[in-house]
Image (cartoon, rainbow, N blue to C red):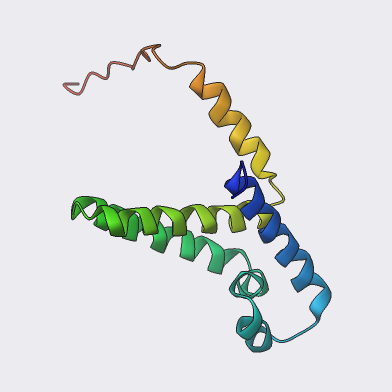
Amino acid sequence: MSKNVLEDLYQVVLDRKAQYAESGESAEEIKKKSYTCYLFSQGENKILKKCGEECTEMVIAAKNHDNDELKNEISDLLYHIMVLCAEENLPFSEVEAVLEERSKKIGNLKVFKQVDRET
């Protein structure tokens, strides 16, 4: 297994995006060969819909305290997020950089705004 499975997976997603762009095949032909290419053929709305579905399924698995299902739904969500990043031409390394920056803030309590709800 690779040191960074997320980077490897993202590269596969990028490869599939390029494959779709070069294929000239119909959505049905593409779907038989590659689900990732199929998502690219359907466009942003389909990819966003799948992200939403996977997020909801992840929440349900967590609420059911089903860790076997939860790990699968988290994996599905991460995959669809990577497809979204590729669709939007956002390098996944930029997402990782944000996470790395945020990891340096661990232990720093965030100050939240106080909202006066009585007015």
